[in-house]
Amino acid sequence: MRPTLEPLTWRDKTALITGGTGTFGQAFADYAVHALGAAKVIIFSRDEYKQHLMKSKIPAMHRDRFRFFIGDVRDLHRLHRAFDGVDIVVHAAALKRVPACEYDPFEAVKTNIIGSVNVIDAALDCGVGRALALSTDKAVDPINLYGNTKATMEKLFVQANTYAGGHGTRFSCTRYGNVAESRGSVLEVFKAQRDAGEPLQITSSWMTRFWITIDRAVRFVAGSIGTMSGGEIFIPKMPAIAVVDLAKALAPDHDIIFTGRRPGEKVAETIISEHEMARTLDIGDLYVIQPEFPWWEKHNWWQGTKCGL
Image (cartoon, rainbow, N blue to C red; front, side):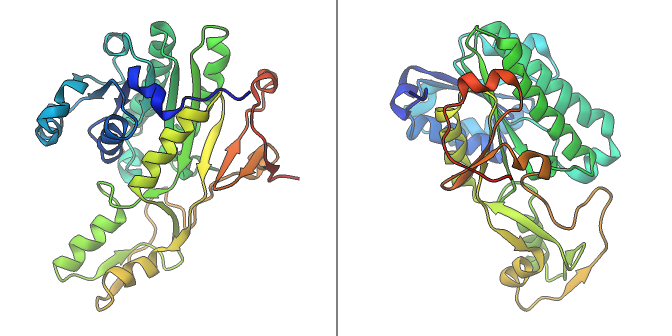
């Protein structure tokens, strides 16, 4: 029988979200409390003002189910304090803007890689049951530093199951594309340019991107936590949309200017690499990439059609 974490079992669980004041973190916290019935949700982030704004939006009747921790994933000691008594960790904290990571690579490494190692260590040391990290399509055959840090994070989380051994902590990842309406997304940029009466700027006429709504991303992450047995990378099936078509739909009467690709920017993203295809299962509305390590076989509860040859 495949182990599951059904929604009703969240009622006595404490969940923690790193990067919890981000677009995803806020949406997932709300879903965990209202839809899954989590006993407590801890928001772990480093911006006290964003925490203040988030607190102000929580209805009074639900405030006792939220906790707020100021902290940084770079600080292992603070993570130990925050993870005490936590059952589920959703690791969403990251530096994610491609140009910023290209310009300040040391900072990206400290947060996205070293910070992820700290999350893993704290989860193991504090006896967290399940830890799931959010990754990106840019981790597939990466050409920029952001993608490389996320590819490394995926490997760290998958292999962390070896370190867990029989202690019960399990680690998995989700991987998806651009989240519509997330802070700093191209949709937000296009709308600002449209409202200002400016031409819409696109780096390449051939550019395409995978898209997912925030609501679906939240449900997908919750479902992945519920079905993970440790080591999987879960990928939702998403449409790939031409960025030009997106711009025309948002502002059909506006001019479009092509500015040229930025450092580290792909024209088209890939969601599964050729190397991963042989161990990828096609299951309904998602793909599951299985680990390539011997320990996976005894935990392989998945059934499906292999995508590879």
